[in-house]
Amino acid sequence: MNRRDAVVALLAIAGAPLSGHAQQAAKVFRIGLLSSLSPSDTALWYKAFRQGLRDLGWVEGKNIGIDYRYAEGRSDRLPDLAVDLVRLKVEIIVAAVTPEALAAKNATKTIPIVVASMGDPVELGFVQSLARPGGNITGLANIAAEQVGKRLELLKEIIPKLSHVAVLWDPQNRGSRLAWKEIQLPARQLGVRLHSLEVRSPDDLDEAFEAATKARPGALAIMPAIWLVPSLKRIADFAAKSRLPSLYHGREFVDAGGLVAYKG
Image (cartoon, rainbow, N blue to C red):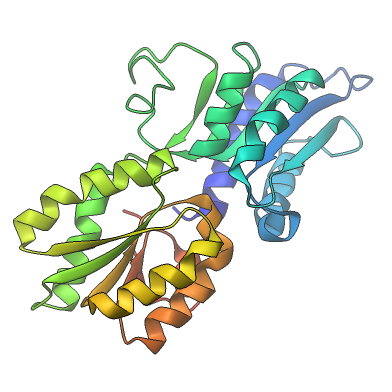
């Protein structure tokens, strides 16, 4: 499932608690959208979101209002933006990925939070268990432990003699940290040495590219981090210029010119 499909699937969840009020046309229900990115980066996703809401009978400006909050690539702004949405008393907060969900979770224990694609919700502490989640968070989980290994296996199939892979990952991003942790075992099993390239923002990419060039790996793997999405073309261009087969977890990377994406 690609990210736009995930957002549309989210509508079925987000629409359910609101649908019971469908006859109360006089009331405008407020949805808070919390994003790590900018309006231009999320335009297609939110267009799909609004269309899905219309398909369910919810029209912005008619029976719902949407409050948008953008961190503009600065994850440190997410907590304050989440608190701002809570102050507005929105009926529901929609988060695309894990960092936004974490900020929303820390801001409220009562407002429902719907997440389009989070990491393992138990491992991240979002729910008590999958059988009895509790709390106020729901949505779609991308439990990536097996997928990380599958992506590495795919690279190995593409390059049978592969023995050295550079890995871009963000140590400040919980999902990215988990992915980096989970790739260790399959790397050992496949006989692949990993070269860590820590990136915390787009400003770190040039230094990471330079380190990758010096390390001379046989391929490049990118661990998920939402702020990387606007930089995918930049990463794909570097990989192509360096003749590095590259792998990502979303189709956006292939659309930007990357070699392979595997979502699982």
